[in-house]
Picture 1 (spheres, rainbow, N blue to C red):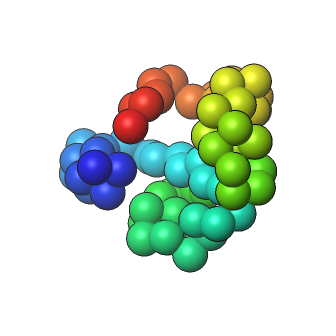
Picture 2 (cartoon, one colour; picture 1 turned 90 degrees about the vertical axis):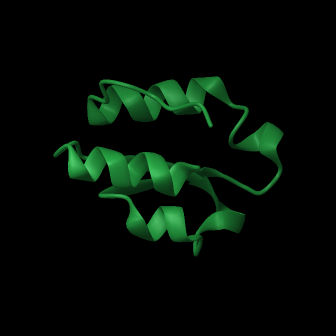
Length: 69
């Protein structure tokens, strides 16, 4: 799903940012994104479920929208 969203964004001229855990560093969605930020170790509770880290990345990079998928 992430790749589909990124492809659509790219077609519309919208830059994309991927957040990923250390375990997903080589994943296709990470390589395809215009920018990618590692937000922590593999357990989801230490990365993807850390809303504070997600918000921090969004603020730092001035992200306008988030796809929570």
